[in-house]
Length: 376
Image 1 (cartoon, rainbow, N blue to C red):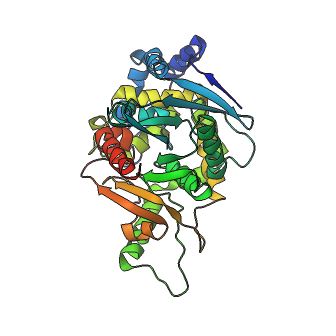
Image 2 (cartoon, one colour; image 1 turned 135 degrees about the vertical axis):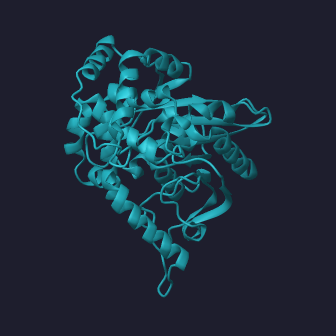
Image 3 (tube, rainbow, N blue to C red; image 1 turned 90 degrees about the horizontal axis):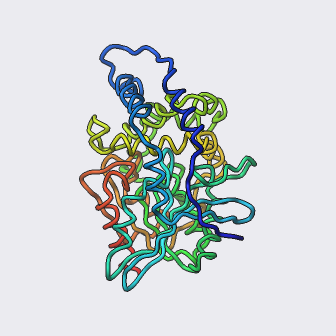
């Protein structure tokens, strides 16, 4: 086990190659006036690509990354990238925050100052890159799933001196956080989630049935999956086939990721209502320079082999805080969540979507603070 400081530096030839590939893009056609209804909008993608090629400065993003305390930990032979920022409050509480796909650790940079600077109560933040994402190692052996990652996160927190800590996450990070709570109840003090894992199914005793509200939720999820879930099915079943194109074409990669930032955010039809071009391109460029699109989508396949289907005695017993943003995809009713989680805190907000830390950093960080202050 070792932990070493880390600085991001991308060889100039990688950046030059990216610019060249952007320059020679071969564009498809588009149905007239189709907007985003068939996928990523062609005119906006061209606009963003021109910005990527001619204006976007990855070196500026690297400077912003390197302004935070970055580290690489080697645990069980795996290299894990993470940020570690200690709070300034009279009382501090350690939490590990896990991102999802198609995001990255960059999602969390807006909430770092909001969670670490309160003079009375703040957090020691550990913000890792999921295995196969960003600067963390791409594991090419089978088994890189939520269970393995939870094991690595627990070991990481212990090595940093935190025997007990809180967990927070959305998207894939919600599955990892839930797994940490289930597998290490003696270490996890509380759970805060802004998403419920899609594979989550609570245990129903014989004779117990879902409520009408819960049944309607499952129907809505099925309808959404039919209309919008093709990406997930591809990730689960044949991620390698998809990866050839996305790893070779920066515009293809951009289109695949951009569609989700548009469709899953509370952008009201204009993606730049909630994200700047630099924010979008920083995240996409991180995937490009690290060549992690295949390893990041492959986790869908690995997680499908260990779904969060709760058994009779499976229950997240730690205090759990849930925050619901209106444009979050597939969010279950409270009763359905409470079948498997000890929900002690519930918040609903009028704005925000899947990328809560980027879209509504003040609301999310305030809710995290309120919840963990109550159990500290």
